[in-house]
Image 1 (cartoon, rainbow, N blue to C red):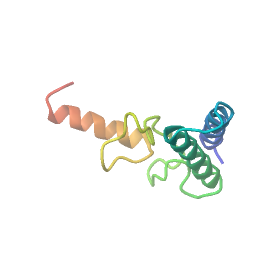
Image 2 (image 1 turned 90 degrees about the horizontal axis):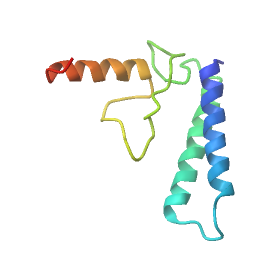
Image 3 (image 1 turned 90 degrees about the vertical axis):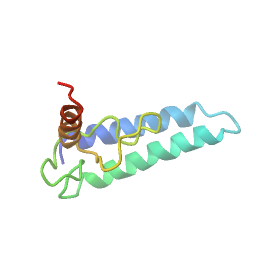
Length: 102
């Protein structure tokens, strides 16, 4: 178990708790979707506490940082990107170089 795994679990549970306690008597579909997403993140993070691949699911960086955009419905990652921040950053830099940016 790494600190990143535990931090991801705590973050997801805090988000789920915040959403749940702010719900009205009849939550909207969006509120329900946000709560479900937070609970799925918490479940995945709890499962990662005991897995060999770590939080990222990455063979190269199993204990690396999780990309904060992973699972963000408002700003989704491009297709093919995973949870690993290090790998996603490498992909972003390579893509920027292909477009001529520095």
